[in-house]
View: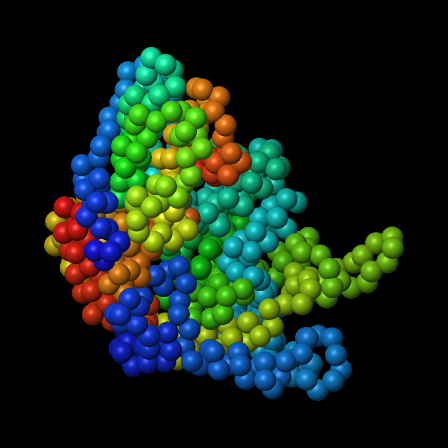
Length: 142
Length: 412
């Protein structure tokens, strides 16, 4: 059991980083995983260069995996460029999460990353690879 | 009601090979029988013996094997007729599952008989299988689609029926006998009387009732009733639809192809007799034989005994669960509830709860249970659901409760 809900996951779940709303974000999107009802809204503030991610905030509700993964994501992308995040492979986040996930739970884990990519794509026109466009579709990201 | 002997779940459990294994190093506590039931050796043997000794296509060959297969298949139909007390085995149509049976009625009856100004009424408690086909066929035909709402206890609120019947020309009332998500036992007799007063047909989804309590279509007085084999210890991919013969005879076919025809000409094709008219193509023959073996198995255990056993388990589970801090239990009191308990544990997402339980070898369902309208009503995205059957023992409920305490500890 402790293998699955390992300490770092529980810590991010109980004390989510970057949790909250943002006034006038530079990029935002929300997503829903209809299968389990996970919801995540992500807001991004960009630095003055219009490219570097200055701050990421998220609000949502859902399972420990979806909320902890999104919390981890906010720390992971801070200071990176929007283009960099647009091409960020999902494996990087999954490695950080560090537990074996079944296909159903994989969707929970990747919800936040998908929403972030969609937000940047909409605000900045960063590329959204077909893999994520498909995910966005399936996850009902609006 | 206990004319039948008390059920010995421990003894029956030994008939189910699945319980011989361990899950994550723990004995399997299977509390998801409302989704699908496990299979006893008697059913698995019936399938194997049929395939090994009597398998051929039915209603075709003049040779010995085909006759044997046909006899077994038609004998299964007879078993189904007896199981639901149908006046005639001709009224039993083999389908893929309850869902297909309900679609059959919605398409074959609904498409022809519904028009603008008509009304189709289902309940807020329906499984998607008795909700979506009616919503779709109503929209295709221009008929109205209305819901009978639920009260706070998770039971149907019938106080608005009079108002509903003034909203259009009532043609179809569709309801489940037992709710798959809350375990509510619905007052279907009342709905049948109401439907018939309005001149409507009554369609009953018995997927969640047939495995657990005696069913008598003549006593119920409904017009159609659908159920699945897999929920009553039978194979997947076979179910049965019972329908009143006069309605079945008037109806257009559903699936078209081989076996359901009388004569095929380039100009016109005429349909075969009921039930062949509704059984196009090669049917789930061995599955129907396994279905009959499953019905024999649960009938031997005693449907009334099963019902009582599950009632006792529901009472026990509700008592035990109610003592867990922050638990929210959904659904009616045990008197009007089948062996299904839905709950949420504080703010914990059901997937997290189910994941912790899985590591303890306890299998429950977490999700919307194909009842999204109901989940909206409850104001939740999902619930946890534990459901019981004739092989469920109180020890499994104790392990569920212990697992829930563990989940609370992990996430607190």
